[in-house]
Image 1 (cartoon, rainbow, N blue to C red):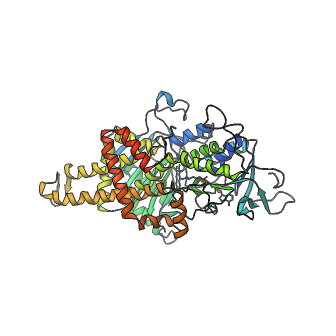
Image 2 (cartoon, rainbow, N blue to C red):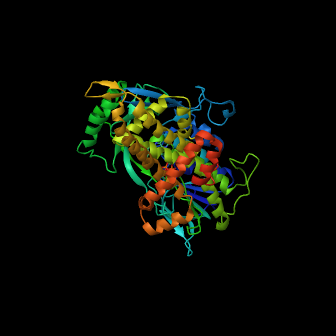
Image 3 (cartoon, helix red, strand yellow):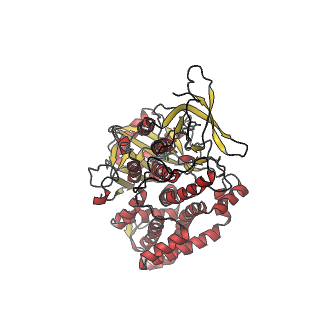
Length: 572
Ligand SMILES: Cc1cc2nc3c(=O)[nH]c(=O)nc-3n(C[C@H](O)[C@H](O)[C@H](O)COP(=O)(O)OP(=O)(O)OC[C@H]3O[C@@H](n4cnc5c(N)ncnc54)[C@H](O)[C@@H]3O)c2cc1C
């Protein structure tokens, strides 16, 4: 390891996880001298970041490091399979088109593929790539603080070595024109640039590793819609499968008292597909440690605003998180690395500018960096919004026990069962291949309307009559009321998340509400102005949906202009 005084750096990156490592690699390749600080370079053992969507594979490909997926026992992922009681429906990724060649990874299934793996193996592979860059210097040390000058500009970091080099002090400082914070979901420095928004935790994922699990649909992510919340299963190696069980609430039942184990054994295992129950029960009986991670939501914040701290940029989970149900975090983070490298320019390499290099920004000149950060915000917006909104909305739909949500869940499942565009559209959003927020809003309301239609037209089970039949006309008044509540519930599920995305596009609103409300302010504004916000978004949504059926092109332009100004769909 180098000593702290031996090198001059353009950029200090805090954290060599998924995003920090990828970013250090791409910035180093673009000609910047990068210091990469990580508290522990040993292989991490975590239950996060184990399924990379095809969109994320494409980001690796853009950076020229898709080979980080080689030799890590990664398993091809060809889509999803959703289980709902005794029924199940396949949700395959889109078929590979001829112009997809070279944009992702070699596919043997004919579909655009993702990969799943042990998180630690992939992180090590990314770190190896970063550290092989001549411009990247590693420091195995914990960053304790960001150093600011008298004007409040961040000018470097102070850190303590994991193991100090011979003759050196435990603590050291590094100075650089730019510091990039990529210290993950428990970030210590996420508020440095001026945002006061804190993550919200609605549930935890509890994870187990299964040996040779007999998955009903190999090479697919499995989503089980249980009554207690969703359960995910996917292979993370030739013989290993991850199961992630969602447990609602910020706090988990006690492991010491055996409450969590009891919950898994009694409430979760019986709802899994039959062929998996024994395997999971066996692992529980062995007493395998139940590991957990909070599932957080942190809306993004636009950086490069005039009232924000200078000299620092926040990326990855430190800046933006969503529920991991849809496995989109790494995809968003890797594309952030691509777009940010592009925005900062480089003398040797630019991942997106096929025509050539962009002029490197002078990192000492914050007035030049500020607009570049705002343009980064817009270039990440399409994909990040889709993945954030989809994850939060689907979790609300699948996570809670409520009669109206039950109607939407049933409708959503039936929507998938119709196949065709009802599967292709949603899966291209989920896989990170279609960064089109309006497509998401369109499918969401289509699910809501289809759920209502199914309420009237599809047979349902009548316990008292012990048979299934279509509802009679006399039941219609009750169903009309139920429909209103279902549509209202759909709006309540979707619109607040859409609003958090829109809010991050409006600098003054973000800054003003942040200072006024302090901690967790994103909940405050939505709640205070919920009626107004819902009414306007409902109006926009209705116009859009109505227009979509008549003139899709105009509807898209109109609604994009109204709801997501400046968001151009980035082809990826
Ligand atoms: C339960 C769960 C499951 C998930 N599953 C998926 C999935 O299947 N697919 C997907 O795409 N996403 C998934 N995600 C999200 C994904 O894991 C994250 O989006 C991704 O890891 C974010 O990368 P990052 O680099 O921002 O943070 P991390 O990968 O967490 O990296 C942060 C790094 O910073 C280091 N660090 C922290 N503080 C300091 C410090 N002070 N000094 C030095 N180093 C420091 C840490 O050691 C770590 O190496 C999941 C998340 C959760 C919670």
